[in-house]
Image 1 (cartoon, rainbow, N blue to C red):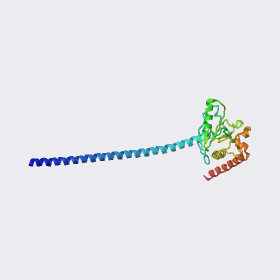
Image 2 (spheres, helix red, strand yellow):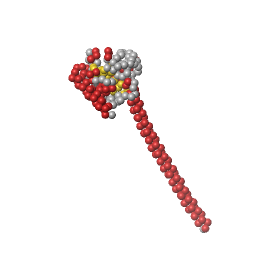
Image 3 (cartoon, rainbow, N blue to C red):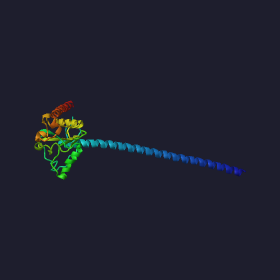
Image 4 (spheres, helix red, strand yellow):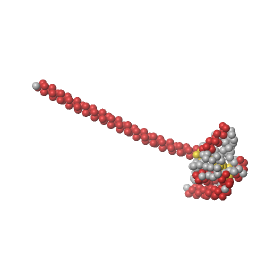
Length: 256
């Protein structure tokens, strides 16, 4: 009886030890799982923060690079006062004899306004057409700037170089091509507003007045820009808006 009792007692102790040991192992496993999960969460948070920092850094560097590229491409200067300037995207053409000859523009005596004469085409469409001329050799044509249907402005040629846009005035003017939605050639409001700001700011930048803003028509008699040729009142109003914007830029510069 005593032996049986001792055996039962031993068995109970062993069973309790096993249960206790099992609970301990289970608890340790649970702790390890929690620690692993916590590490994974911390690593995930750290990775998220690093990616966020890299994203912000890339945005800042990209913006600075874009602004620097635009400044350099405008006329080769990096110290330009951009007060009053509309946002511009520089996508310069490859130097070639059909659209960007690389000939220096030594003096700027005026700004010539054009229309693209291809209704519905975007600024990018027209820029890419100019670029393609280096391969197609179809004709010789280009422009310093193109204003798009959404008011976007694409710069194709630095203002320190001539463009093939205004015939006898290529040598002393800057050219601006404008997109239009239909055959009337009338610019929509977004295009018009950007054109006023771009023209006004360029006038301020190069010491011009709105009287030195002309149409392609005024150089060759070509129906360009169509709406402004057929509607003299609209052209006069545009020049008035340009002169007013020159005053806005001057005021903003003085207030700095």
